[in-house]
Length: 314
Image (cartoon, rainbow, N blue to C red; front, side, top):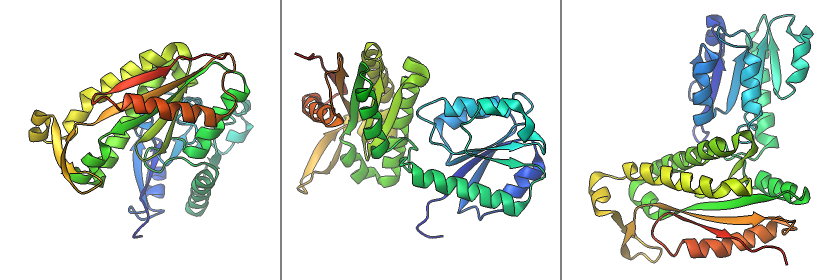
Protein backbone atom coordinates (compact mmCIF):
# COMPACT_ATOMS: atom_id res chain seq x y z
CA UNK A 1 0.00 0.00 0.00
CA UNK A 2 2.93 2.29 -0.66
CA UNK A 3 1.96 5.90 -1.22
CA UNK A 4 -1.48 5.53 0.44
CA UNK A 5 -1.91 7.26 3.79
CA UNK A 6 -3.10 5.04 6.63
CA UNK A 7 -6.67 5.92 7.59
CA UNK A 8 -7.54 6.22 11.28
CA UNK A 9 -10.97 4.87 12.24
CA UNK A 10 -12.40 5.02 15.76
CA UNK A 11 -14.90 2.51 17.17
CA UNK A 12 -16.97 3.17 20.27
CA UNK A 13 -18.38 -0.10 21.63
CA UNK A 14 -18.11 -2.65 24.41
CA UNK A 15 -18.90 -5.44 21.92
CA UNK A 16 -15.69 -7.47 21.71
CA UNK A 17 -16.94 -9.44 18.71
CA UNK A 18 -17.49 -6.22 16.76
CA UNK A 19 -13.97 -5.07 17.62
CA UNK A 20 -12.53 -8.36 16.35
CA UNK A 21 -14.68 -8.22 13.22
CA UNK A 22 -13.57 -4.74 12.12
CA UNK A 23 -9.94 -5.43 13.05
CA UNK A 24 -9.79 -8.16 10.43
CA UNK A 25 -11.41 -6.27 7.57
CA UNK A 26 -8.34 -4.38 6.35
CA UNK A 27 -4.56 -4.59 6.84
CA UNK A 28 -3.39 -2.29 9.65
CA UNK A 29 -1.33 -0.25 7.20
CA UNK A 30 -4.60 0.59 5.40
CA UNK A 31 -6.91 1.14 8.41
CA UNK A 32 -5.61 1.76 11.93
CA UNK A 33 -8.38 1.28 14.52
CA UNK A 34 -8.72 2.93 17.93
CA UNK A 35 -11.22 1.41 20.38
CA UNK A 36 -13.12 2.96 23.29
CA UNK A 37 -15.59 1.14 25.53
CA UNK A 38 -17.33 4.22 26.90
CA UNK A 39 -18.56 7.42 25.28
CA UNK A 40 -17.31 9.99 27.76
CA UNK A 41 -13.75 8.72 27.59
CA UNK A 42 -13.72 9.07 23.80
CA UNK A 43 -15.07 12.60 23.43
CA UNK A 44 -11.80 14.37 24.21
CA UNK A 45 -9.90 12.07 21.84
CA UNK A 46 -12.41 12.69 19.04
CA UNK A 47 -12.19 16.48 19.42
CA UNK A 48 -8.41 16.61 19.83
CA UNK A 49 -7.57 14.06 17.12
CA UNK A 50 -10.55 13.65 14.77
CA UNK A 51 -10.65 10.22 13.09
CA UNK A 52 -11.16 9.66 9.37
CA UNK A 53 -14.32 7.75 10.27
CA UNK A 54 -16.26 7.28 13.52
CA UNK A 55 -18.21 4.06 14.17
CA UNK A 56 -20.51 4.37 17.20
CA UNK A 57 -22.47 1.61 18.91
CA UNK A 58 -25.71 3.00 20.23
CA UNK A 59 -25.57 0.57 23.17
CA UNK A 60 -22.84 2.16 25.33
CA UNK A 61 -22.57 1.57 29.09
CA UNK A 62 -22.46 5.24 30.07
CA UNK A 63 -24.57 7.09 27.48
CA UNK A 64 -26.69 6.75 24.37
CA UNK A 65 -24.46 6.55 21.30
CA UNK A 66 -26.74 9.08 19.61
CA UNK A 67 -25.44 11.70 22.06
CA UNK A 68 -21.94 11.20 20.64
CA UNK A 69 -23.35 11.66 17.14
CA UNK A 70 -25.09 14.87 18.20
CA UNK A 71 -21.93 16.25 19.81
CA UNK A 72 -19.78 15.60 16.75
CA UNK A 73 -22.29 16.76 14.16
CA UNK A 74 -23.29 19.90 16.08
CA UNK A 75 -19.73 21.27 15.84
CA UNK A 76 -18.94 23.09 12.59
CA UNK A 77 -15.33 22.02 12.91
CA UNK A 78 -16.05 18.28 13.18
CA UNK A 79 -19.20 18.00 11.11
CA UNK A 80 -17.26 16.65 8.14
CA UNK A 81 -16.17 13.50 10.05
CA UNK A 82 -18.26 10.62 8.62
CA UNK A 83 -20.23 8.82 11.36
CA UNK A 84 -21.80 5.36 11.15
CA UNK A 85 -24.05 4.17 13.99
CA UNK A 86 -24.61 0.55 15.04
CA UNK A 87 -28.20 -0.35 15.94
CA UNK A 88 -30.06 -3.35 17.27
CA UNK A 89 -32.02 -5.42 14.75
CA UNK A 90 -35.18 -3.40 15.43
CA UNK A 91 -33.32 -0.11 15.81
CA UNK A 92 -34.91 1.53 12.79
CA UNK A 93 -38.26 1.49 14.56
CA UNK A 94 -37.03 3.98 17.16
CA UNK A 95 -38.81 7.29 16.61
CA UNK A 96 -35.97 9.27 18.21
CA UNK A 97 -33.73 8.52 15.23
CA UNK A 98 -35.67 11.22 13.39
CA UNK A 99 -34.05 13.81 15.65
CA UNK A 100 -30.54 12.77 14.57
CA UNK A 101 -30.44 13.05 10.78
CA UNK A 102 -26.75 13.82 10.77
CA UNK A 103 -25.21 10.32 10.86
CA UNK A 104 -23.94 9.22 7.48
CA UNK A 105 -24.93 5.54 7.54
CA UNK A 106 -26.00 2.75 9.90
CA UNK A 107 -25.36 -0.93 10.55
CA UNK A 108 -27.97 -3.36 11.91
CA UNK A 109 -27.20 -6.39 14.08
CA UNK A 110 -26.41 -9.17 13.42
CA UNK A 111 -23.32 -7.90 11.58
CA UNK A 112 -21.68 -9.63 8.63
CA UNK A 113 -18.09 -8.88 7.70
CA UNK A 114 -18.86 -8.18 4.03
CA UNK A 115 -21.67 -5.70 4.79
CA UNK A 116 -19.66 -3.86 7.45
CA UNK A 117 -16.68 -3.54 5.14
CA UNK A 118 -18.72 -2.30 2.19
CA UNK A 119 -20.72 0.21 4.21
CA UNK A 120 -17.71 1.68 6.01
CA UNK A 121 -15.67 1.86 2.82
CA UNK A 122 -18.48 3.55 0.88
CA UNK A 123 -19.22 5.99 3.73
CA UNK A 124 -15.59 7.04 3.91
CA UNK A 125 -15.32 7.38 0.11
CA UNK A 126 -18.50 9.49 -0.08
CA UNK A 127 -17.21 11.80 2.63
CA UNK A 128 -13.85 12.13 0.91
CA UNK A 129 -15.43 13.00 -2.43
CA UNK A 130 -18.07 15.39 -1.13
CA UNK A 131 -15.88 17.34 1.28
CA UNK A 132 -12.53 18.99 0.80
CA UNK A 133 -11.31 18.46 4.37
CA UNK A 134 -7.57 18.88 4.83
CA UNK A 135 -6.09 15.35 4.98
CA UNK A 136 -3.76 16.23 7.87
CA UNK A 137 -5.92 18.30 10.23
CA UNK A 138 -9.38 17.14 9.02
CA UNK A 139 -10.48 20.80 9.02
CA UNK A 140 -12.65 22.13 6.16
CA UNK A 141 -10.54 23.03 3.15
CA UNK A 142 -10.46 25.89 0.70
CA UNK A 143 -13.74 25.22 -1.12
CA UNK A 144 -15.68 24.90 2.14
CA UNK A 145 -14.01 28.03 3.48
CA UNK A 146 -15.01 30.11 0.45
CA UNK A 147 -18.60 28.83 0.65
CA UNK A 148 -18.80 29.57 4.38
CA UNK A 149 -17.48 33.13 3.99
CA UNK A 150 -19.88 33.85 1.15
CA UNK A 151 -22.74 32.30 3.14
CA UNK A 152 -22.32 34.64 6.13
CA UNK A 153 -21.87 37.59 3.77
CA UNK A 154 -25.08 36.75 1.89
CA UNK A 155 -26.94 36.48 5.19
CA UNK A 156 -25.87 40.02 6.13
CA UNK A 157 -24.37 38.73 9.36
CA UNK A 158 -21.94 40.70 11.47
CA UNK A 159 -18.85 38.54 11.79
CA UNK A 160 -15.10 38.58 12.27
CA UNK A 161 -12.99 36.69 9.71
CA UNK A 162 -9.43 35.93 10.79
CA UNK A 163 -6.62 34.72 8.54
CA UNK A 164 -3.78 33.09 10.47
CA UNK A 165 -0.40 31.81 9.37
CA UNK A 166 2.90 30.77 10.91
CA UNK A 167 6.03 32.89 10.65
CA UNK A 168 9.37 31.10 10.13
CA UNK A 169 7.62 27.78 9.51
CA UNK A 170 9.72 27.02 6.40
CA UNK A 171 12.94 27.45 8.35
CA UNK A 172 11.68 25.00 10.98
CA UNK A 173 10.66 22.51 8.26
CA UNK A 174 14.05 22.77 6.56
CA UNK A 175 15.95 22.03 9.77
CA UNK A 176 13.68 19.56 11.57
CA UNK A 177 11.95 17.84 8.64
CA UNK A 178 8.43 17.62 7.24
CA UNK A 179 7.23 15.13 9.84
CA UNK A 180 7.97 17.59 12.63
CA UNK A 181 6.41 20.31 10.51
CA UNK A 182 3.20 18.28 10.32
CA UNK A 183 3.24 18.02 14.13
CA UNK A 184 3.40 21.82 14.31
CA UNK A 185 0.41 22.13 11.95
CA UNK A 186 -1.58 19.61 14.01
CA UNK A 187 -0.73 21.45 17.22
CA UNK A 188 -1.71 24.78 15.67
CA UNK A 189 -5.04 23.42 14.43
CA UNK A 190 -5.87 22.06 17.89
CA UNK A 191 -4.96 25.33 19.56
CA UNK A 192 -7.23 27.26 17.17
CA UNK A 193 -10.12 24.77 17.39
CA UNK A 194 -10.03 24.48 21.18
CA UNK A 195 -9.81 28.25 21.64
CA UNK A 196 -12.70 28.94 19.25
CA UNK A 197 -14.81 26.24 20.89
CA UNK A 198 -14.12 27.77 24.31
CA UNK A 199 -15.04 31.23 23.00
CA UNK A 200 -18.05 30.48 20.81
CA UNK A 201 -19.12 26.90 21.47
CA UNK A 202 -20.47 25.34 18.30
CA UNK A 203 -21.04 28.70 16.60
CA UNK A 204 -17.48 29.29 15.41
CA UNK A 205 -15.94 28.03 12.17
CA UNK A 206 -12.33 26.94 11.63
CA UNK A 207 -10.79 26.02 8.28
CA UNK A 208 -7.38 25.01 6.95
CA UNK A 209 -6.57 26.70 3.65
CA UNK A 210 -3.45 24.60 3.26
CA UNK A 211 0.16 24.55 4.43
CA UNK A 212 0.48 26.88 7.40
CA UNK A 213 -2.58 29.02 6.53
CA UNK A 214 -5.77 28.81 8.61
CA UNK A 215 -8.97 30.83 8.97
CA UNK A 216 -11.63 31.17 11.61
CA UNK A 217 -14.97 32.98 11.78
CA UNK A 218 -16.82 34.06 14.91
CA UNK A 219 -18.74 36.90 16.49
CA UNK A 220 -16.93 40.28 16.28
CA UNK A 221 -17.28 40.78 20.03
CA UNK A 222 -15.31 37.59 20.72
CA UNK A 223 -12.50 37.86 18.21
CA UNK A 224 -9.89 39.80 20.20
CA UNK A 225 -10.20 37.49 23.17
CA UNK A 226 -9.88 34.50 20.81
CA UNK A 227 -6.79 35.94 19.10
CA UNK A 228 -5.16 36.58 22.45
CA UNK A 229 -5.95 33.05 23.62
CA UNK A 230 -4.61 31.45 20.43
CA UNK A 231 -1.39 33.44 20.62
CA UNK A 232 -0.92 32.77 24.33
CA UNK A 233 -1.41 29.01 23.92
CA UNK A 234 0.68 28.74 20.75
CA UNK A 235 3.59 30.73 22.20
CA UNK A 236 3.62 28.57 25.34
CA UNK A 237 3.74 25.30 23.36
CA UNK A 238 5.85 25.93 20.27
CA UNK A 239 9.27 26.31 21.98
CA UNK A 240 9.03 22.66 23.10
CA UNK A 241 9.25 21.56 19.46
CA UNK A 242 12.81 22.94 19.25
CA UNK A 243 15.91 21.34 20.73
CA UNK A 244 17.39 22.86 23.89
CA UNK A 245 20.15 24.78 22.08
CA UNK A 246 17.72 26.47 19.70
CA UNK A 247 15.37 27.30 22.57
CA UNK A 248 18.18 28.96 24.52
CA UNK A 249 19.33 30.99 21.51
CA UNK A 250 15.75 31.88 20.58
CA UNK A 251 16.52 31.20 16.92
CA UNK A 252 17.74 28.58 14.46
CA UNK A 253 20.29 28.62 11.66
CA UNK A 254 18.83 27.74 8.29
CA UNK A 255 19.00 28.72 4.63
CA UNK A 256 16.75 31.43 3.21
CA UNK A 257 15.05 31.17 -0.18
CA UNK A 258 18.25 32.36 -1.89
CA UNK A 259 20.34 29.67 -0.21
CA UNK A 260 22.05 32.01 2.27
CA UNK A 261 22.60 30.85 5.85
CA UNK A 262 20.51 33.04 8.16
CA UNK A 263 19.18 33.18 11.69
CA UNK A 264 15.44 32.73 12.05
CA UNK A 265 13.50 33.45 15.27
CA UNK A 266 11.31 30.75 16.79
CA UNK A 267 7.96 30.39 15.09
CA UNK A 268 5.23 32.92 15.78
CA UNK A 269 1.71 33.65 14.54
CA UNK A 270 0.39 36.47 12.38
CA UNK A 271 -3.37 36.97 12.52
CA UNK A 272 -5.24 39.41 10.27
CA UNK A 273 -8.84 40.06 11.30
CA UNK A 274 -11.45 41.53 8.96
CA UNK A 275 -14.59 42.83 10.66
CA UNK A 276 -17.81 42.76 8.69
CA UNK A 277 -20.47 45.05 10.13
CA UNK A 278 -23.49 46.64 8.49
CA UNK A 279 -23.07 44.49 5.35
CA UNK A 280 -19.74 46.10 4.55
CA UNK A 281 -18.50 43.11 2.52
CA UNK A 282 -20.22 41.90 -0.63
CA UNK A 283 -17.86 39.11 -1.70
CA UNK A 284 -15.31 36.84 -0.04
CA UNK A 285 -12.60 38.22 -2.33
CA UNK A 286 -12.88 41.60 -0.60
CA UNK A 287 -12.17 39.99 2.77
CA UNK A 288 -9.19 38.11 1.35
CA UNK A 289 -7.66 41.28 -0.11
CA UNK A 290 -8.09 43.25 3.12
CA UNK A 291 -6.58 40.38 5.12
CA UNK A 292 -3.52 40.18 2.85
CA UNK A 293 -2.75 43.84 3.51
CA UNK A 294 -3.26 43.39 7.25
CA UNK A 295 -0.95 40.38 7.38
CA UNK A 296 1.86 42.47 5.95
CA UNK A 297 1.56 44.72 9.00
CA UNK A 298 1.42 41.80 11.40
CA UNK A 299 4.52 40.19 9.88
CA UNK A 300 6.62 43.28 10.48
CA UNK A 301 7.10 42.01 14.04
CA UNK A 302 9.10 38.95 15.11
CA UNK A 303 6.54 38.02 17.77
CA UNK A 304 3.03 36.63 17.55
CA UNK A 305 0.55 39.40 16.90
CA UNK A 306 -2.89 40.15 15.51
CA UNK A 307 -4.11 43.15 13.52
CA UNK A 308 -7.74 44.21 13.22
CA UNK A 309 -9.22 46.17 10.35
CA UNK A 310 -11.71 48.45 12.12
CA UNK A 311 -12.86 50.41 9.09
CA UNK A 312 -16.61 50.60 8.64
CA UNK A 313 -18.85 51.08 5.66
CA UNK A 314 -19.11 54.64 4.35
